Amino acid sequence: MRVVNFGSLNIDYVYRVDHFVQPGETMSAQSLQIQCGGKGLNQSVALARAGVETWHAGRIGPEGRFLKETLDRAGVHTRFVEETAGSTGHAIIQVDSTGQNSILLHDGANGRLTPDFVTAVLDQFSAGDTVLLQNETSCVEEIIRQAARRGMRTAMNAAPANEKLEGLPLEALSWLLVNEVEGAFLAGTEAPEAILDTLAARYPETTVVLTLGEQGAAAARGTQRARVPARETAVVDTTAAGDTFTGYFLRRALEGGTLEEALSLAAAASALAVSRPGAADAVPGYEEVLRTL
Image (tube, rainbow, N blue to C red):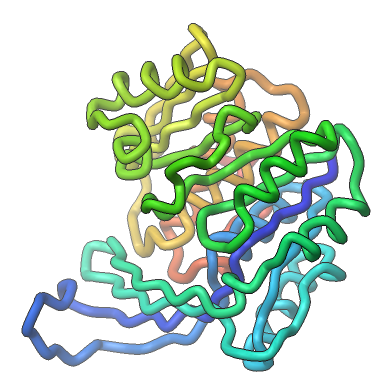
């Protein structure tokens, strides 16, 4: 199992607050932590901790070198993480007293991926390998089309939900992972079953995975359906919940597990992640997740 993740690399500025700041409101934060982040980084860490051979492809500015070091420590291959001029991507994250989060993103170097960079990276992989991506970098369409031409499988976490998703060749994906907001954006409907039915009918060759927070997770491929409940846990910080889910779902899917098996493993890993503060640091290891099943 070889996965190359064309993923975002962010510096996270995490503010603990009593409640999310409102328009016109000035409020003091309870604390500030500066952490590694970006959906791409978190998902690469999750894949590596799940035991998947993972390469990360992305770009950082000079102040983002510690992000590459974090990937290295997690066991992710970083030969395709390049340093460029300009700022590293970053996120301003509010975490409220219930553990919910609100995130403001700046692309930075994540927006400086080029078609030549994509080609140079994919030339090092082959048919049967897997590409992972999110909606937080440039060249997403280029990555999907090149991977399809090369006979590679592609998974996309379609986050965040915005106009950049419109027109992407999502029918070429092997896996499409969304939460309720992203699923509703793509499907044009809000009911979970309707989201799954709509996207499964639109992309019949794609496994559609829908995370539902406290309601668990569901998946569809054609007429096949699977659903698992969320695992009970004390919620401390939900920042890396979806990214942990993505990494662990792909681990089981890539080794041939059923939809229900992949959902169950991913739900268990996510429950552990939300019980801890932080993003990448909160992602559990594979053996720890197995002990909870």
